[in-house]
Image 1: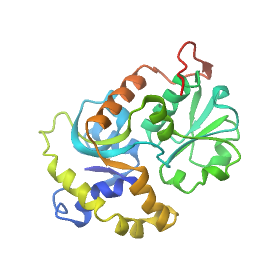
Image 2: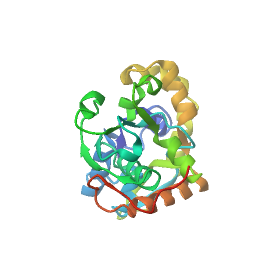
Image 3: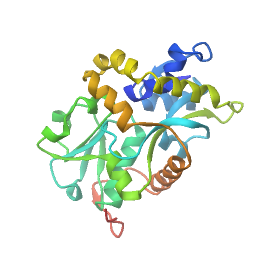
Length: 262
């Protein structure tokens, strides 16, 4: 089983690491894009999969648990030297394909631009040397304090929910189509065990990320939604539709007739 190696994944697998689900799965940790590639190649049968991969691979969602938000997510920032409608080059931490797709959706549909996207290591100063904007995600974003940055900053979770009125789903448990249907109960039980132990998770994991225990706790309690229901899956469907309409990565061009009011 392939599992994302970010703080926001830990509650999903806490029961698999420390609870009654401990011996049910063989866990292997990787960045989001690698988790998706392991399922595609057959190296893993089940994984926490970036949402946008559902447009690319034949996967069966294991319903009920995942990674989502109902507003600010605090770990996906679009940071720009110029107003967002002037972004032509975007340096993106490509470890999460969903975040790259989300940045393109928001820039296209709300700000009317489709930037050229360049893959880059998550280091803000070097990203902004030869790009108008940078996409910083995951634990690398958690160590930033957006209010102190001398740039334009969007929290893409907040921007999506304002734009659509729907939750944003970043990742789901999914299995390869060839795998027999999975009982969702162990995944839900592991997640609920994690939610009951957020204080323990924050205490255990905050130093690995480089943030305070308080920030880790508030992030997992207030920013991330782990239990997915009908509204979350409606948000997922909308995101997948918008992402599928984007086509290949753009070349820094304006987009006509698609601007969306906040």
